[in-house]
Amino acid sequence: MQENARNRPLYRRSRRTGVLCVYSASLLGIVHVLLLQRNKWGLSRRLHFSWSKDATRSKDHPIFASPCPECIQFWSKLTKSEESSSRDEMIIRSSLRDLIERQRESNENQTVLVEGQLGNQLCNRLRLLVATICYGIVLRGRIHVSFRQGYFAEFSSLFKSPLQLQSSARFSSPASLIMRIPQDKGQVCPDLFAYSKIVLAGSFYWTILLFLNKKIAPHAIHRLGNLNGVFRRIFSNLFIPSEDIIREVKSFRQRAGFQGKYVIGIHLRSGRDFRSAMVDTDWDHFAGCANLLEKSAGKLEDETVWFIATDTQSTRDEVMRRFPNSSKKIFFFNDRFQRANSLSGVKQALVDLIILVSADARVLTPASSYSEFAYIMSKENSDNVFVHSTNSNAPSMTYGKYHKLSPWCWTPTVKEPSVHELRQIIHLHRHSCNFSDLKQSEIDWDQYNVTL
Image: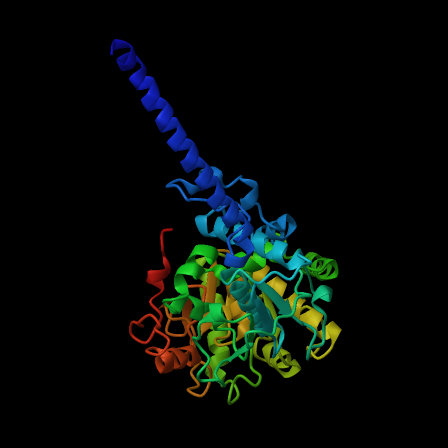
C-alpha cells in the first residue's frame, strides 16, 4: 500500500502528460488547417502587429518600413516636414506592403479584384486611384487601374511606384459589381465581400463611404487607420514624381530665387467649375488672403514671393493686369500657359502642382480637386486658405470643419472634403446602407479618431 501511494503521484503526472500531448497534437492540427486555408479565408501571411500603449516602440520593425523609402523622403523634404511615425502611418505601411505583395503574385488566389475606372483630369484621377487602393486593402484583394485610358499621359511618365497598378488576374464569378456615384442609386452599399470583382467609377467619395458604412467601417479602420489624412499617407508612401518632373521643379525654384523667401502659392481656378466669371471682389479676395497669410507669418513684402498656378491663359493675363504695381514678385512656371490636353501639358500641370505643395502657404480655390490635392499633400498645420466666393453661383467651401481667418479666407481643420454631392448620397441611402448618422448635415469626423 505504501509503495502504491508513493507511485500514485507519478501515475497522475503521466496521465496529465498524456492528455497534454493529445491536446497539443489537436492544436497543431487546427493550426495546420488554418495555414492551409489562409488564402481562402483571407488571413494575412504577414505578422499582424498588436498595438501597445506605446506603439512607436515597434515602429522600426521591418513590417512598418515604408514600401517606398524614396517616396516618403521626397514628400517629407518637399514640405519641410518630419517623417511620421504615428500609429495610422504604421498601419497603412503594413497594409500597403501586403497589397504590393498580392499584386506581384502570379497565381490567381480567390481574392476580390477592384478595378478603378478613372475619368476627368489629373487630380480626380489620382483621387479615384487612391480610393481603388483603399478598397483593395480593405477587401484584401488586388487592384486594376488603366491610368492611360481616356487620358493624355501614361502613369509611368508622371510617377514612379513600387505598386503594380494592373493585375493579370481576372475574375468574373460571382457576377461583377459596378459601383457608380451618383448614376447608380442602388449600388452604393452592397455586401462588398459577396463579389469577386468590383468596379469603382464616377466619383472619388468611395473611401469616405467605406468609413461611413457600419458593416465595412471596422475593416477600414483596422487596415487603413483613421480616415482623416488617409489620402496623404497612401500617396506619400507609394508615389514619387518622375525624375524629369522633379528636375523641372528644382530648376524652376532655383531660377526664381525661392531660396530664403516666403513662398505663397496661389491656385486660381476660373474655368468651367465657375458657372459665371469671377467678379472684381473675387480677385481682391485672393490678393487679400495672400496678404493676410504674409502678415500672419510676420514677413515683409520683400521677403515674400507669389507663385501663381492657373487653368487658362486669360487668367494669367488678368493676374498681371490687376497686380501690375505689386512690389511682390509674381511667378508662373512657364511664360505661356499650356492646356493639359497633351503629355507636355499634363506634365506642366503636375509641375505647377508640386510647386504649390512645396510653398510655405497656399491660397486655394474651393471645390477644385487640384487645390484640394495641394492642401492634402502640404505640411501638417501649414497655412492653407480657401477663398470663399462672393458669387452665389460659384463653388462653395467643401470641408465640413474649418475656421475663418476673415469673412473670405477659410482654413479647413480636416483633410478629407465633405461636399454637397456626398451629403446628398448619404442622405438618400442612410437607412438602406446603414450609414452612420450625420451631425448637422456634415460628417462627424471625431468618431473616426478610433483607438485600435
